[in-house]
Image 1 (spheres, rainbow, N blue to C red):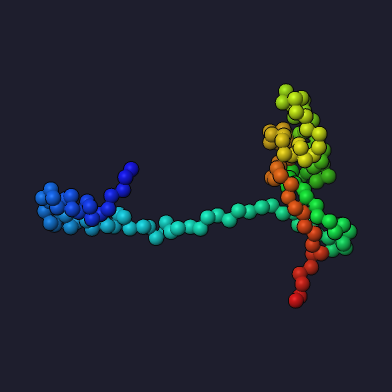
Image 2: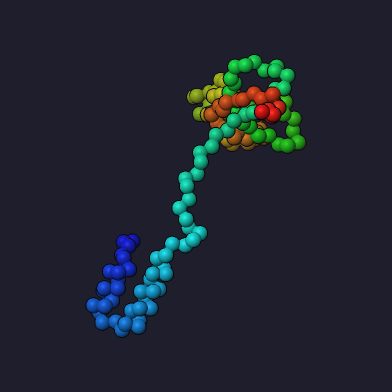
Length: 145
């Protein structure tokens, strides 16, 4: 819908012999209507976020190299040791489908990136990041400067 300035509308109304009292009320009402709402301020664009896995390693047992991993979710009352089995089960189920027989997944990375969520949901595991994210080590201490 095209926008028209309040001044142009006022000129058009004057040309059509509208009484000055009505013209003034209409112009005041239009000026109020075009005022921006205080709640509709220009918001900055949302900040793009990424996932990072922060692993506590106070004893320095993990190697110094960088690792990548995926963020997964399982039911709260289940053991985390079953997570790999759940991913495997979802991959096995996918590989038995027509698409899975044509393009079977062979690694955990391929499974997490390519297997649809419905197969993982059946195995009670939810993939939060399809692409691997960087895993950072921390000694679990805050420096005292």
